[in-house]
Each structure stands twice: as C-alpha cells, then as structure tokens.
Length: 234
Figure 1: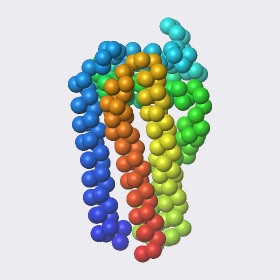
Figure 2 (figure 1 turned 180 degrees about the vertical axis):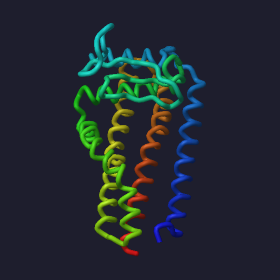
Figure 3 (figure 1 turned 30 degrees about the horizontal axis):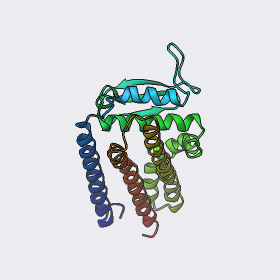
Figure 4 (figure 1 turned 45 degrees about the horizontal axis):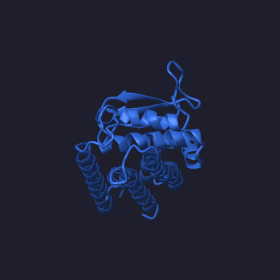
C-alpha cells in the first residue's frame, strides 16, 4: 500500500523533526535578539561593512549584480536571504535595523553567501546550476510516484523516484554551502572587529541553530526517498 504504517511513521518523524528544529531555532534567535552587541552595529550596517571589506558593495546608484551587492529590508521574520540573480541581500525586520548579536550573526551569514558568489565557490556554483532541473524534477516527482504505484508500473515509479532524488541531491548540496557561509561569517565578524571574542560563541550558537534547518531538511528528504524506494519492493 502507498499509505501504510511506515508512511504514518514517516509523517510523525517528519513533523517531530521539523517542529523541534524550528522551536530550537526560534528559541535561540529570540534569546540572542534580546542581547545588544557591544559595538552596536545593526544588521544592515554589518552587511554593508563586510561587503565593503570584500570589495563587492554596490556604490550609490550602481546597478546590483555581477559583483555589486546591496542590502535591502524584507518583511517577515527569519526571511533573510541572498539572491545571486539580483545581487541583493534581503534582511528581515528583526535583523535589518536591529543591533542584537542574533541580527549581526544572520546579516554576516547572508553576506557570506554574497562572498561565496563573488569567489565562485564550487558548491554554490553546483547548487545554482542544478536549480532548473531540480525544480522540474520536484514538480513531477509526486505525480509519477503515485501513478506508478497505482497502475503497478515500476518504470514510472522509478522515474518518479529519480525525479525526487534530484530534490534530495539539492538538499545535500545545500549543506556545505550553508555551513561554509556561517564559517565565513564568524571569520569576517572577528576580523572586522564587529563582535568581541566573548560575543563570537553566541553568534556561533545562532548560526549553528539556523544550520539545523538545512540538516533537518536533508534528513527528511533522505527518509522520504528511502520510503519511496521501499515501495518498489511491495
């Protein structure tokens, strides 16, 4: 059966891992959001400073992209991201104009992605390159798996599994990209003197908790893939 006891167990594990991860991330972020950094830099100021130190800050009026990066506010919480297509670092409301350790850490992490892009970081290049095929595979995987199982056509089922496997590959490739961005962030914050040696462990805790998002996503994707492969043996 497509939806059996193993599927129920998978759903329970997926929900539990997701909920626990998000709870830990929010708890850690909220904790260090209440602690102001000693230097008092806001997230936006930190991002601008690190971009300038790495010679990739867009000059006033300069078009972003192709090595020129700008910082912009974005609505929401924990919605921070770097878009390599536009050269924009988008920082959320609790990060952009806040001077907490959490805000500084998150801003530095996103700037780490911009630095990766400028340096053509290998794993980042791979992730960007596979996005189109991953998007296509993800859009058809579920339909192929369900149809393949219902009409008992193993070839169609395996085609869906391979398509879903592309999404799993993307999650796995994302891990070194995110971990490297956090590593760069801590080095940049220390070298630029934005955070003191006593504040770095707190920033590391924020970034480690955020990194768990990607670890959890990869784990859940692998578990789903193993479940789908198990369907071929029924």
